[in-house]
Image 1 (cartoon, rainbow, N blue to C red):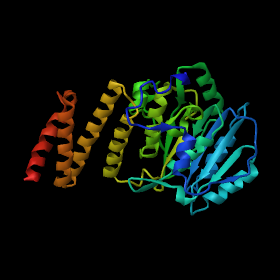
Image 2 (cartoon, rainbow, N blue to C red):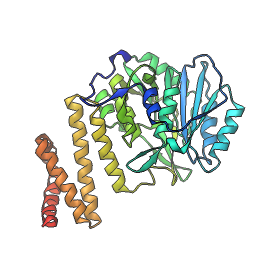
Image 3 (tube, rainbow, N blue to C red):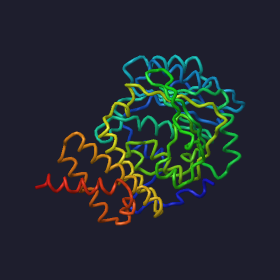
Image 4 (cartoon, helix red, strand yellow):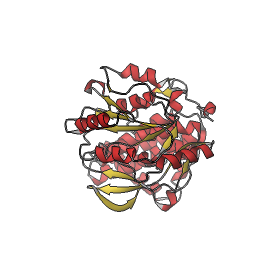
Length: 361
């Protein structure tokens, strides 16, 4: 299955290379590795990125250590130079569980900035490049698992479905450290996902996934270091290797929304602009016309929402720029107009175009 990599094909000019090579290119300072000697190759690598998670990271690590799993698994913890007690907590866990935890202490010089925002992308990709398991799970330090059988159930599901590159489950949403009663996935989203949807914007709770370690043998697009929405880029990259299976037998994980979250701290306008930019970058991954069409439609819809937001805030100049971007998209790709027929988007676009012309005058 992994031999079918990049079935959609990178567009001309899009560079790919082994992940270790790309990580090395971005590394500016040493990464300190804490006390893990050679061991037998684990079946699963659990990747935990953590930054400013002192109130949460112990619960995250405890939930992974509690896994009832007959095979060997490793926990790779990347501590990204927090200034709270996160690093001390991670050091304590690494000292108490040296047979399980591999701790990597990062230097701020290695942080990758995307659109001026410091990200944890180097931390994540460094851990992925060091993962030795056949399968990889992700869980950020402010999230946690609620099913001690998660690893066992997900490994079994992937082994039973050679066409799948990933399995995932649902998550509950915690707001201000309290269960909100919300699920990450609505009933209609609790289903398998085909390659096209996985490539273009599937809704998947990242802390719930397990995927095949394609990074061990396959090149990685260099654009992984440029796309702000790393989850979206990762899922799109994985779509080149298979489908995603929903596993409803796993107790939902926990996804925590709090003020310290990087995405939560951004305003709505910045989120939309970053989402548009990520879709444009992801588009370079795929030579498939249907996938490119779906991504173009996504860019168009978000741009319409962005123009509406500017109008709601009374910023006619920004609304005008967004409206002209929509017109340029329609001029270059007339098929997008089919999205407008019989929909509210058509009237919105006409209104925006009129206001844009007024603002330009």
